[in-house]
Amino acid sequence: MSLAQELAHGRVYRRLRVHQSRRARARDAIAVMREKAPRSYLSLSWGKQSLIVAHMLYVLDPTIPSYFLASSESWGLHNFADVIAAFCDRWPLKHTIVQTDRWADAPSWQAARLSGRGDLQAVADRDGPWDGWYGGLAREESRTRRIALSMRSDSGHPDVYHYVDGTYRCSPLAAWELPDLAAYIDEFDLPLLAAYHRGGLAVRTTARITGRMLTQGGASTAGDVSAWNALLAKFPELAIWR
Image 1: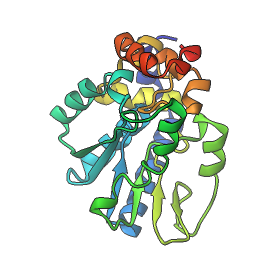
Image 2 (image 1 turned 30 degrees about the vertical axis):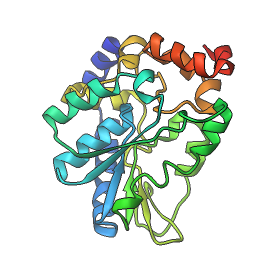
Image 3 (image 1 turned 180 degrees about the vertical axis):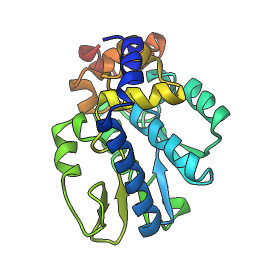
């Protein structure tokens, strides 16, 4: 199904009770999070789910901090710069791009990958301490996320998880499926990465080249061929995934 067809279906789907129920659940999760963890930030990947969460949060509080972890390869993988500019022009988030460059001196892709472990967890540390974070995780994305998002705590909401260290994670879209995403994106005309325009909302995007990204076909969704070729010139071992 093309993106245009998905959005047209979403236009009808958003009137259904199942979607309205999931929207209410997302709003409730955010309300609980705002009460339990008022000093929280948004971990923003600029993928389809995190765009929706960014919009939901901005409408409630335009000052909520958001962070995007950009790696050496990010800007060549997808047109993040275009989407960030289009979104922030309409909804000017308090947004920080945390740029890393793990590729510069790495002798191999594997070495670069290993040196970047922990980057995501530390992305907002400089402005902490934080009570928790919001993200666009959804159960339908993978078995790993389904298991993680099925864990329960004493937070008072199934989509808000209370860690043993006292911090919280809020995943407002945990129960959402592709039609729910299409319904919301269509209603608010959210800007999307070019990969979704080419392949529809089922496409998985990422800002980093990871082992999982490669084995799940992520290399085939990368939009800038010249940037990908530059990466291949530096790390020829990546060629088998293209």
